[in-house]
Amino acid sequence: MPNPLPVANRGWTVLKVLQWAAAFLKERGIDSPRSTAELLLAHALASERVQLYVHHDQPLEQAELSVFKQLLLRRLHGEPAAYILGRKGFWTLELKVTPDVLIPRPETECLVEAALAFLKKLPAGRSRVLDLGTGSGAIVLALAAEAPEHCYFACDLSPEAAAIARLNAGEAGVSGRVGFWAASWFSALKPGRALFDLIVSNPPYVASAAIDRLAPEIALHEPRLALDGDADGLRSYRAIVGEAHRYLAPGGRLLLEIGSDQRPAVQQLAEQCGTYDGFSCSRDYSGHDRVVSLLKKDVATR
Image (cartoon, rainbow, N blue to C red; front, side, top):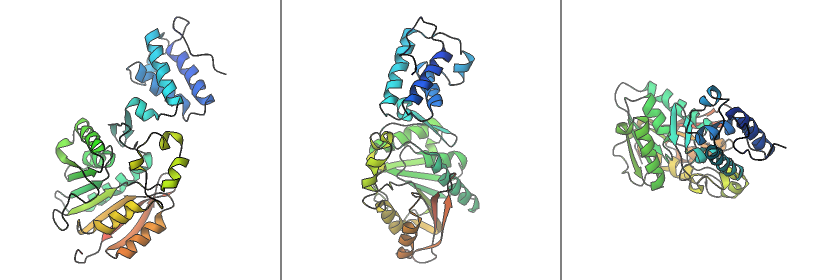
């Protein structure tokens, strides 16, 4: 077993504390114990992660060790590291995250890639992009940073989440390119007016009964509002697929992140709606179905 919690004045250098903490976390089944230890120690020291190795032989003061111990215990009790740190990297951005927003996942970057590929095909000019259920703003802010020539809009049912996204836009230097509001899906918009060339969304898609079977750091700490897709996980897709064509410009596209087993169900919803062409689904970095693409049919908006 790892040694007891370290105390100051006993040769506890940065490197020795890191080695102890990594073993401490590994023994208790915490994912990525070494990188977690590095992130938490850098946070405790108000330092950059790389500085831990530049100053690896620096001894820690009692106050520094005390702060680090508290961070370790929070992680040990299941609190996600991103919430402890208050930050999460996504795409090229460093985003503020709190328990009011879902922690951005690497697989969601596949949705950003698909959106950027579509935007590159559009004629020159300022196209309009809408992000539904924006959360921390990860998707829309990544797009605004990469393709600044377009106009971006984003909404979330949670006013607290919308506020976090707005703050992240300021930190990313794109606040002048993105408009935010708090509302449920399309409820703040009028069909047929101010149409969008692209609508993107990573909506809640976990079946209600499955949430409590997720890892404790997800089930107990991340916002249920951002996870719960109702009994079958499809409530959000019914709402979005059923209405998005009313808000898409001719030739507009809808891009949706889905759960790895939801492709057939979402395809069926699109076919039943009858207002989309060209259904396709791309896979994430792990080979799972992840991003559905739907093109609005060249028919009158209903």
